Image (tube, rainbow, N blue to C red):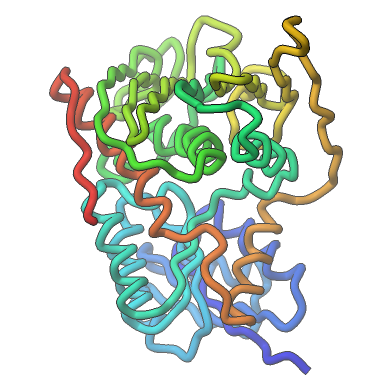
Length: 360
């Protein structure tokens, strides 16, 4: 009989409920504690989800004193860094919601702490569990495209601005980039084996979020709702990144991989004002190549599936904890994703190209 894994949840907001549902799908997993900095919120969360055997804490550090196998960190973005470092130092494996952190320095410390302690830091990019994402990765890494020299990724919603903690720089650190942009970056970068970024030249704005005509919380909206950047990588590769929560346009276009022998065009799934970004599934994949000198377009079949991608990422984390495997989506890798977001923020503020400094 398998040992029952004891899990704690830090942060009792909306996303924590998705973690509860995912853990409940798994055998021999028990949520034994919940912590939230708002007095009484953890207890309310436990009552709402009927976690009858769970303890409630207002201070997550008390939760970390328990005998736990792992924790899900579902706090606002600005708390990811300190909470993760403390959890790793306390000997807990970590399932961390995206984005990894607010700054590059924070992400580096988090990854280094995981390496130093030997405990897992897994970052929650559930779109990776769509089998079509694996197809994209397989095509790009197969060599069929030849030398990939240009990538374009991102996406946009015609109207898709959240509220609450998402629109406060003090709490979220960044806006559309941290919320949905990190997914598009992960899709492209993971397909290419996460190359090392070198420089970023970026622009961002928040014309929609700060306008009461478009957002009911305009007075407190101080993050970006639009961003675009050109990123240079090692290996003579450039990436054109663009993301938007709101715009007067139906799309910012598909993701493109341009190679010397072929190209790949990927569109996101979904329709309507909240679609158009890669925080869900893939809509279509088209392979452009030449056959006997003729321009050829091959439609790669989309794999239909009924997987709950969020549940899949939690399942993968639990199995890695149980079997002593490495993190499925390791923080050490996602540091490069955070480095780009950090660079976009710095470049946008300074209105010039900036260098990305990563530790060796």
